[in-house]
Amino acid sequence: MINKLKIINDPVHGFIKIPYEIVFDVIEHPYFQRLRRISQTGLLSLVYPGAVHTRFHHALGATHLMYTALETLKVKGVEISQEEEEAAMLAILLHDVGHGPYSHALEMLLMDNCHHEKLSLLLMSQLNQDFNGRLSLAIEMFLGKYPRKFFKQLISSQLDVDRLDYLKRDSFYSGVSEGNVNAQRIITMLNVHEEELVVDSKGIYSIENFLTARMFMYWQVYFHKTSVVAENILVKILKRAKELSLAGDLLPATEQLSYFLKKAPNEGLASGDLHRFTQLDDSDIMFGLKSWSQHSDKILSHLCQSITERNFPKSIIYSKEINPGIVQEIIKITNDFYQVKDADWFVDVIEKSLLPYDAAQQPIYMKNKENKVYRLEEAENQILAQHITEANTKYILSFPREVLSKANQLIKI
Image 1: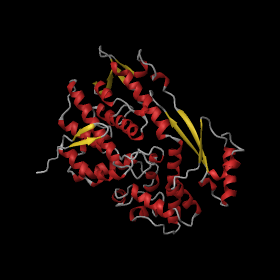
Image 2 (image 1 turned 90 degrees about the horizontal axis):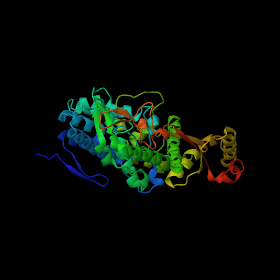
Image 3 (image 1 turned 135 degrees about the vertical axis):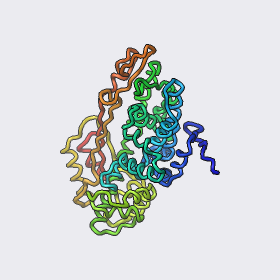
Image 4 (image 1 turned 135 degrees about the horizontal axis):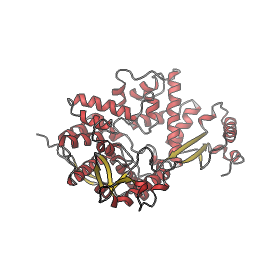
């Protein structure tokens, strides 16, 4: 008989327990094993070389934190059944199972505007059939339909185990210490009041540190201008490859990628598309990039070489909107340089916004020793919470370095 109660050695959290056989069985399923071949942070390793970890790593880490959180709540007197614990662990284990290769944006191109959360739900439903309904409660929690709201809040909210893991993990692998949150301390401070998740009042500074760490990670890591530009180029590559494929160009590609490149826009999900999607991973995309880098189409080959050779365009970050007239002038200069009509493939203005703490839609609640519950930003001893409730927006202008000398006359660098 196979021992399914495993212990996994994780570089971020240490030893991770797999306490239930059903969790082990789902981990062993090909849908989940695919996550070993899906990068957690897309092309971020082109900026931070150590950031080569996968969504498989992250899903296991988040599942470990879910188990730790539920065990902590049980110690505090919250009644949680084994069935509920299993379901919550399965829900967080599979929360990213619908992610496609490299980029969040690629799923919109390859899967006809089907968001990864919808794909995750479709795959969870398929797994539920494979496991004879054992995932029904997990799906209910994932959708937020289970009456005990704190389960959904642990899976997805402003203070969930998903964020606790990816901040700590991405900080570890990227080497950016600003994101290293004390996940164990935060979990120790969690509590439940009237079936909703709250934080014991003495944990307020850990929560504020968590929110600011997330803000710093976004601006310093996830929204790093080079990483943002690289992801934008990857999206354009797939868009261009799809245009050429639909026009009859037989681009070299793996069987599954070729299928999605030839699939007409707005066609919807056909029978078998979901299974084909589960055959896609980062290696399909990288094979395409390497193959297309020598293609006769100037646009496709240039964009592919930007990533395979790490030869990115010039990028400048601004705190205010960029004059559209300047952008059009740079496009014209680029047109003349490359002798093409489609220089907007090479010139971009990318907008990135972040709301550090959404106090209106998803407030974090604290609870004091008198069992009084109040919002984080209303706490008398809060320091930062009320100051991080407004969105901040940055604008990234990118254009070919070959036209930098002429573009320099238009912009202040």
